[in-house]
Length: 355
Image 1 (tube, one colour):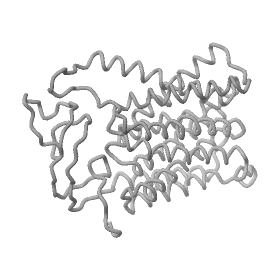
Image 2 (cartoon, helix red, strand yellow):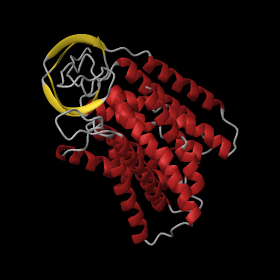
Image 3 (cartoon, one colour):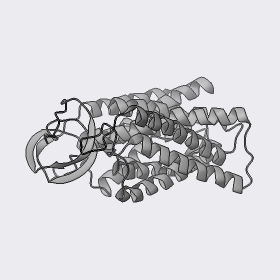
Image 4 (cartoon, one colour):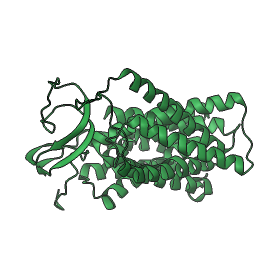
């Protein structure tokens, strides 16, 4: 849960900070720069981690994260297009004509899109508390965004931000399929490929490039609010599943709205406090969620970083401490048991309609 919360806070403050930069740089160019910053930052961390982490050339387990494999590429490509190219460009185009606080709050709809796609297309089990949290987040976002004098509901900028949220919802579900792979590597590839494409698109369209100082600021924004946030998000997908990780992102719009009022001073309306209470209520629901039932683990062979626990009971030629994370190809034997769990990579089983 902590990974998801920190990821949400970092991403949440990106909207008002991006709004500041949009006064100096074209939206498409900014989308490219922030994702290049994210990719470069995580790429450096990945190289440092690889240099400092021992690996084995024999059959002994490695301590490194699992790398990408050929079957992962379609999922990664879809995530790059949806979340690395379409989402950021649409958000920043919409943000250029939308108040920062309103834009931050509209990001709530990523939660809705993520949960709907997870449940409808990927058949992820979603309990009533998660759906209630999604409803509370949606109601809170709507309440916070209602302003009869502003009339933003049908503004083109707001619609672009909603479209960005839909693409990020798709991205979240595609990335979930490869969440057992090295999150730093995933973010590096997504950032460098998507960032290069968006920046190249801006140049090809004749959009002006910013000054060196603005470029550095955009790269730093991308490293912190996109790079670190995405890597933490991928980590969270492993443990919480897509719908629940997305629902925790209720904190992102709230953090963005608070910072927006600081950077762009305006008195909060009464609806702001009502929306904030709904978001807190949603987070409480998620924290209290308990999903437990008898379930069967089908036999599976795969590779990912893991420790020895109730789902990883295999043996090694050399003794490995129970708490030591390591990576290798391993087999899960059939297993039936009951315990509280989330729809993580080892609990993507089917459920009865009443579950």
